[in-house]
Image (tube, rainbow, N blue to C red; front, side, top):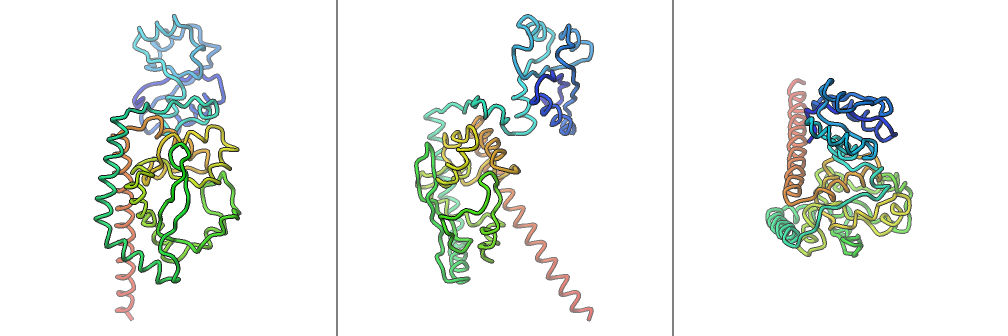
Length: 323
């Protein structure tokens, strides 16, 4: 939204300095940033005119008087909140806003919700029909490896905390549900979890094929095609206890694909920031964009891994001929 603008950030808080640093790193997007300390600004509209700023970003609206804001608008200078600039630069909600519980989800409209449900069901039914042969092949492979259950069924929390049974292809040896050896703020596996992944499961997880049975959850109405990842009750309770605003994740249905799956994050707080960006701006168009991007990532991964396997086979064959 602000790409190409020359933006003046009024440096007054730690958050404004954080945005300043992010903007400097994002310079490849064409955002030209210049910083001035707010206490040294005597005539903001003149400064913007002289230095050709096209926008002013502030942490607090009260930093600039109403008359000054009016003069800025008269000079064609946009007046923006730092939180909005942060979201445009990072595609996630600032934790400052989460902590202050200033998240305003996209409004719910019955027609929009119906269309989202209808599109989700159509995509899920189509996906189920197309992947039925794959279901059979994966089921045989999972069972054949250790003669254990093909499906992993676990209670997860849906919209407004409603529990439902989530279906996945089993990719790990059966867990001890009462034990958790990791850190609830982390999003990667604990040592105990990583050691339980089966050989077939490792392949399924690489291509996200273990999630295919969730098509049934979408058809049943437990999930949408797109949304935040569904969480276990204990995981949600533990994270809600230490992360302010975590309950916002349950304001929408979870999804198979999601904004969090196509964006990187380091911990549960960043994961929440990414998910809340989706919740704040979600729309049918955004959902379709995420779904296409997710499908493209999976296809690209399959092609890359397949090409790598072919090259390795050719390399081994060539070495064999050279002997």
